[in-house]
Length: 327
Ligand code: FPP
Ligand code: MG
Image (cartoon, rainbow, N blue to C red; front, side, top):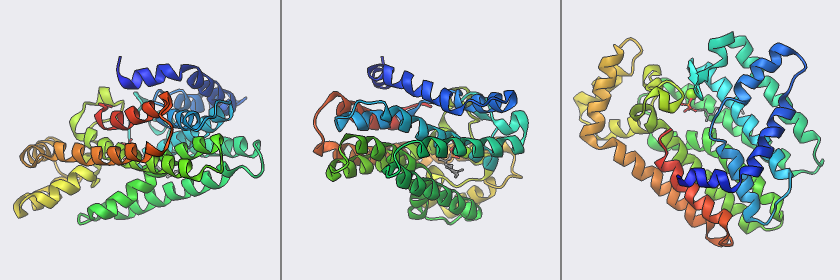
């Protein structure tokens, strides 16, 4: 059994409770609304963010059901962001299912994303008024939107720097993963700032590792395994971590060709063949994995201030899983 499956097994009861919360809090009495919402809420996925909330709470000594509610909240924010991201990216498949806009059109997809946010607000207001989760999640969703707006704005910029790109991914992906850990840690002891900061840093670092690997898998794995269309970023002409690296090390002729193949008019097979040859020539895959591993290692180092419990070991394993995963 893989480390990831062992972690899932370790907290299977908690994850079952999270699934129950997800269903309970997103149900609609209107049949079509319910069908469209459950299409994305049930739709597979690794439940990485709920796992992080539960493990972060456990490693800080908390075992109650608040962790399940907050885990469901972060998963719903994540699902809502993916529903909207798939509209922006015109993606056809997500988590092995048709995306909402493919099945029912952009209007339904945008509105289901909004519906999920409404459910998140409702779940949060039913908690304590002074709950720090409110401020954490408000800041997080704002940063996710800012990251996506900057990314969309920069999408035509072939010269985007690695530093600019890393900032974008720390917002669009890192913030919610970090918030999952912060929220879990808060449930333990809100005055343990060292533990909370350590888990926030851990989440931010694995978030960056996660997105670098996500960018790489787009070029190296097939659609069935990914549960979404492979080469989607290339098809859209999106500059992601592997392409930004390849561009920085290739020669001028290759750089011009790379810019050309990122244009949507280029024949897809030609674009894929060229990018693959560039990746082989410049060792792009090992470079990305090494970069991702360095973030995972920083994440693990941040955990050193925490007690050496099974939950901490699981978090350490999760950091490595984020890099070694194949989907
Ligand atoms: C997937 O990135 C998308 C994200 C990590 C964030 C999406 C955020 C928004 C759409 C902003 C709105 C957010 C909220 C909470 C309202 P990707 O396209 O690189 O990954 P993919 O290949 O899985 O699609
Ligand atoms: Mg996308």
